[in-house]
Image (cartoon, rainbow, N blue to C red; front, side, top):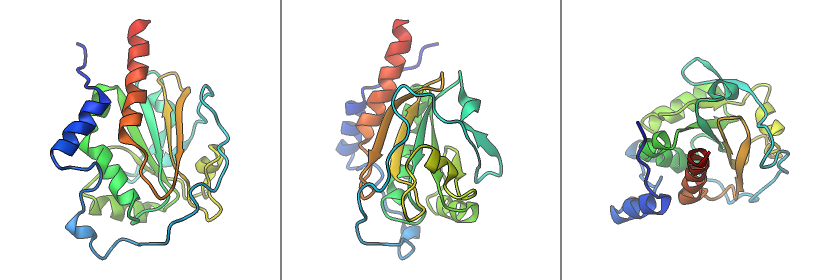
Length: 205
């Protein structure tokens, strides 16, 4: 049975038409609990992988108590690795709930998001609970500190990761990289377009 997909631009237009800017739904629970810092240096690392490379495999602990490996999705799902800098910060607290809003789109595009930060598990658990739960795996790259972020070349000098997206196809190959200005959310429509392109390529085979 084929899955129905919708153009990424149409999805974004629908959200805007409904008055919902993706990821900008502020929870009452977050009032007074978000750490606001001055704008940071946009990018403070040098990515060490490129499109066409096999994505470095890893196994990290998740907030559910399980250990999750990138390789467990090989041959099953396209993967969006979403690295964000820190729990309980403004942009991060909007980005992942935005992905939750379009979870059906990721499902339709045969993709799963994996969220990764260098925070420890208790902090990540508390943060995701405040966000009302996150429907995809949330992993801690806390110890050895930032090891996975470092392997991808996105560990910042302060020990946090860049705000970065890596789209990894079902064969384990990196197909898209966006190491974004840490102070801004990566464009949602661009991410969806990359996933749509993977599905179109598969259909043509």
